[in-house]
Image (cartoon, rainbow, N blue to C red):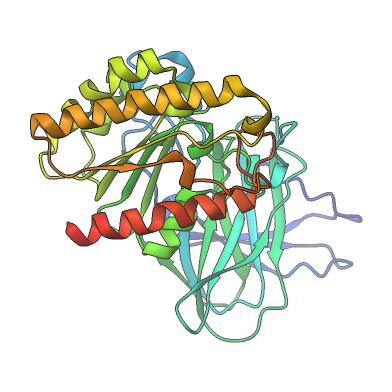
Length: 372
């Protein structure tokens, strides 16, 4: 394993001692304030947000057997670790991370490295609320860094959200030797399952804890499985055959930004029937597309919204007429604000946009989960 520390006067690796579920490293740099650390590999207790165990790489979002079944573009995007998180409890005064991502494209023109490839640390406060604490801005594929230091004494729970638009190759959490460390296993509650587009995937959040699926997971205290596939959320039967293998609290189908009206009309009812046949009692929420921020000045965009939404509404109404139960509908005009200040590029939400999307989803999901 290689470490990109970039420390001056690096001398040598002084010692390594195997521990149960962790690895102990002591760095022999007497000019550094780096402590001796216990390293804990998250694969030893598991990440939350994985729907399948039999993945080609540990942090993949679809099972290995999906390769060659779903389109190549979907398969490639499924290698990103969007929506995954890991939890632990410690009294450490500082927390370190050693991790690697699969691609050297750490950022995108419209999305920073903190969101594409970073780690996002949250802490649980005394009122059991999750509060943001720190984020990692990687500068290389392999990163060894202190995420946060100077923490007050006392044990508390922590969550680390994994990169959104990059694959995670490995992740270890480090705490100073002598600090307590208790892994928190992934929850077994039925998750919120999102199937959608680049917006669901996380574009263009500034950090991995900010997309609306992550926000809603915190607000509703539910696990989340994020199956957003950038540019490729298209209500496909090949993806649906894997969705039905999971048993979520609700299926959230949010694919309209990647689809035109004809495909929406063609695919909505078959996908709902596919889900309903396998999961007769699981609620399904159909979501309209968000409104482009510059729609008032570009009539063609409003025409696309009108056609797409009409096609989805027609399919929804036909399904209700057929007697499909537990089917819900979220209008697109609710998703972003009327001030149009909440996107990065007119299409993808910025952090404000994701906050507003979470506000729009939350009452619908609370009703759905309450009815369940």
